Image 1 (cartoon, one colour):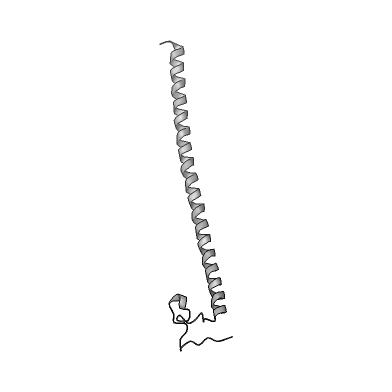
Image 2 (cartoon, rainbow, N blue to C red):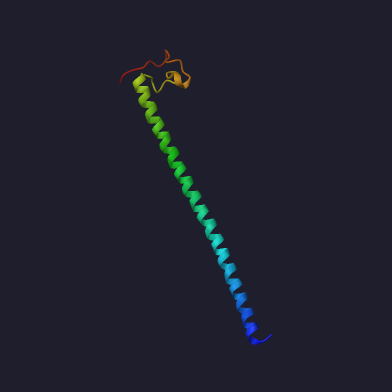
Amino acid sequence: MDVQEVMLEHEKEEWAHKWQVREREAEKWIVEKKEREAQILHENMEEFIKANTEKKKFWRSKQNDILGYDQYDPNSNPSDGGDGGSDYYPVMDY
């Protein structure tokens, strides 16, 4: 082998090493990106669930107000398995 072939072989090895390093960095970046996306999705789902729960509570209270069910009487609302009211918790207008 002459000097040119040795230098060419050495340059090939350097490029192969650089390419491996770049591939590892790219794989690491992809994993980090997926983790960030998963974290954002998780946070968005928590916010959605919280907002949806609040919205359900609001509309349930409005529905109960309209229908005259007492929110403190667990038997008051028939859709929750109650009998439509009980003797223990009369519906009162405040």
